[in-house]
Length: 239
Length: 261
Image 1 (cartoon, helix red, strand yellow):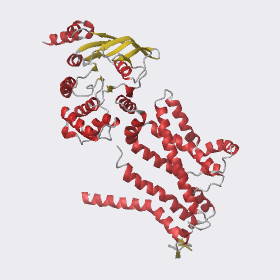
Image 2 (cartoon, each protein chain N blue to C red; image 1 turned 120 degrees about the vertical axis):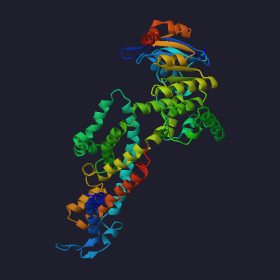
Image 3 (tube, rainbow over the protein chains, first blue to last red; image 1 turned 180 degrees about the vertical axis):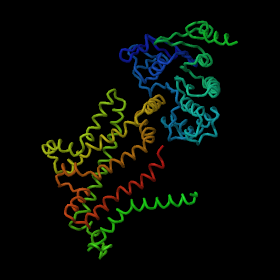
């Protein structure tokens, strides 16, 4: 398996956040994780990225134990709900950031950033500063900044949470397209039922620190705990 | 009242305010250039540059005091800004953040002079009393906590997230500081540096107590001349005293506030 989390436990004081959680993620797969606020989704992603340490359990990437590796050597990028663009750098330099860290040759930086800008439909915005962009544009730049370094895994923590419904829908389509084009392996965390269904190749439900991953979307829809049935009933009643 | 009349009224008030603010500086300059200025004469009987020439080479030691004050305040501002920037980060993300911040406020709650009086025993015992090093350490007791309090608000959850993001993008701590944190903090760092420079520059009580009159900063000189009723030299020393802050204000306006991100 490409990415594996085995029996992860994590608590903050007396509060148990992750309870013997295990998951498997195949290469080029996007797993949606649906969960309410406080269900432990963010903690799980931070443990996978190396930003938090588990109390127990281990994370394996391509069979290698990630435990001893610091976040900057895992090649797992964690994206927040907020785009967190660097305010002193323009769009071009924000996207080029990871390449500059790796001291990539200038010619390669120019070429790859130009390609990424085209992929994100942002070539006209290259010289703009982050505060001159819309919410959706900022999130696209954040994707570009992450994707340009070819991460092994992309962890997306409710990336569209702060966007309006229309921008959110177009961003979902854009991410789907990019995920396919770049063959991304990703975990997509959301509290939106519809978004979980749209984005994931598979879907998991997180409740009180436990994760249940469904074999198919049908199984997810049929499970009463996911809330899909209640949602469908609601729309039927309106009809 | 028409708009034109309102405008001219505002302009008039502005001019009066500017004149009120600038008058003390103009008066000091005049006093430093004047001689034999007795009541009821409106202006000095004699104008001379003798006082100003006494800065260098005169027995007043004003030049030495100016250089000493500049070296001391620049060093204090640099050390306290750099140190408090780093330490404030540890405090901001510490679980006992509030407790550490209360400690940082203590020098101001007790007043710097009282703090110096309390610490004087240790300064004498360690041979720091009357020494430049002792004055520098004493000034750090008030400037460092100021910087700490100043920077704590900079280290927000957003900054922590930025740092974590840089790490997952492959950056190490050095790269996080040099490529993002320091450029983003440039404005606050320069503002803090200027403020700490000013605190050190105008510091009197602490410097007088720990320096026991042997460390003659420019601020101490001004008070010395005032006590001696040497008005012309006091005015000259005051002119020198306000010059660096004016330069800093100009730099602040030109390079900091216009470019703060």
